[in-house]
Structures are given as C-alpha cells and as structure tokens.
Length: 136
Image 1 (cartoon, one colour):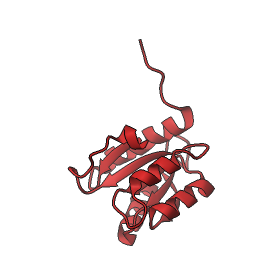
Image 2 (cartoon, helix red, strand yellow):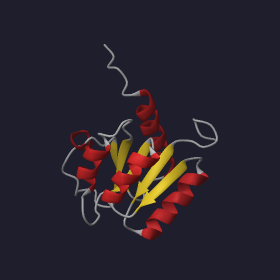
Image 3 (cartoon, helix red, strand yellow):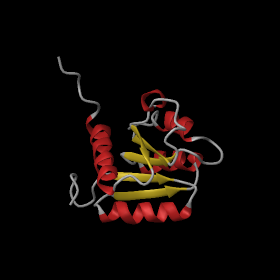
C-alpha cells in the first residue's frame, strides 16, 4: 500500500514510445502508484498536467516537438505545481542540471524498480509539502 493510502502518488506518464508507456503503467500500478494519464509528447503532457493535476510527471527526455526541458519549465508553472522526473536512456546526454530546468531529478531508464518507486514517492511528498527548509 502506498504512503498516501491505497492509490499512492498521482503520476502522469509522458513518452512517445507506446510500449514503454504500457510497461511503466503496469509496473507503477503494481507498486501502488496511481497513473492519472498518458501522453505521447511534451505538449500533450503539459495539457494533461493542467487538467489531471498529478503530483509527479514522469517524462522521457527525447521526444518530437517540444523537448522535455522546456515542457518541465512550463509544467512547473502550473498551480499546484507537480514535480517532474525526466527519464533518459542517455546518461551523458544531459548537460543541464535538474534544478536549472525545474526538474526534481533525472532518472536513467532501466534503473531498479525500487529506486524509481522511491524517487516518485519523494517527488510526490515534495509536491504536496513543498521543499524542506534548510537546516542550520
């Protein structure tokens, strides 16, 4: 059971690969994470994020049209602002730190399910509670 009860965090999936979307949905739902929608490109993801109000957007880095970094900047302007985790298969491709784009984190495709689940729950917690205050 998820940290928010039976449904777990609300997640929107954005990827232009239909097989990857189906696999992500299946895996995340088996971990108690509620998938509130799927989008095939960043523009559609931005529109769905505004309507479905997920706590976390899990988005592929490379897609046709608007790139994930620009989409992340726009998604983070929504109220309430969901956290964005950017998925990539290219470890060396990301030159911009996650904080610069407003992303919560970058995550390599193929990472462990436990790591992915933990990152989604952390991002959802931050979306709901806001960033932790710095300690002195």
